[in-house]
Amino acid sequence: MEIEMKPTPKPVPDRDVYSPVELELFPRLTRADYKARFGVQAPPFDMSRPVQRFFDTTADPLKPYTFLTLDKKQLRLASVTIPTAQALSPNLPGLYEYAKWAPEPSRVQIRVVGTGEILPHGSADNLLATREQVEAMRKEVGLCFMGLLTGGVTSEEATLNSSYQYVYPIDEPRRIWRLLVPLAHGATQPFNVGLLLQERYRLGVGAPGAWKLIEDSGGYSLVWDSAIGPTPDWNDLPETPIPMRTLWADEELFYQFGGNVGVRKKSTAPAVAGGFTDADRSLQQSISADVKAIRGRIAQVFGS
Image (cartoon, rainbow, N blue to C red; front, side):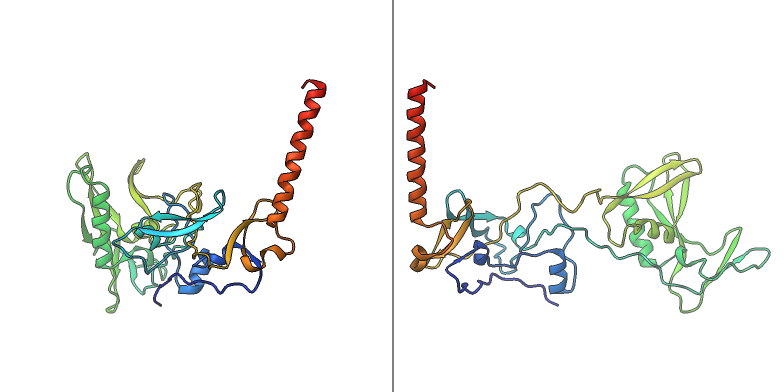
């Protein structure tokens, strides 16, 4: 499914007064809305960006993206400009769901050298990797520790060791591989690639992070240090407003009772029921002036 979204004005409400939300050119998206519309998840939430519940695939990548939004203090629609790259991609709060890592079941046999005992079915599943996975892992580990190792990270197929023998079906493309990591003291430590894949995708396939080399009593361990923080689904940056259309000739913004902004049709404004009309505003100003005058007289009488 093609992911496309463009500015689309809503029909003018068949009412005399309505919310400025009716001027918005895009739906106000959530992660659930995005997945329902496009069949895939929205991109992971970026903590460095403000929340942005719209995106515009028609934005010109060669020009800044300028749009109108409500300025409540000035009671007008004001222009806002954001980078085009920002306009092209939403930033929706909520956790990104990374797919669970589950290696395909195999019919690989692991036999104990000497006794010929065959380990239980499935014992090899978490140890297997394709050649492509091995190469990708070799490069990733090498880049994480560039300049810290005594040499390059290499790999080898574990065909036989002192304890076990591996028997692969003819249609099984995966093998048991090891990464050979040269450490600072001159030794080379092997790491099973299948187990590294399991560690890499512990929080889901594609979850961000970096490898850490940790020394323990048995030597060294490669541990995936996740970049997913404790609260990666929100930030305190002001939310990017949703673009709005211009007002039609018969529309105007006005303050409703309580200071909320509404949109009304000029032709019917004086007769609006329940709205805060110009007459209401004049009456409020008159009352305010009378209250100030009374306070002044009280101050003169009591000297305060």
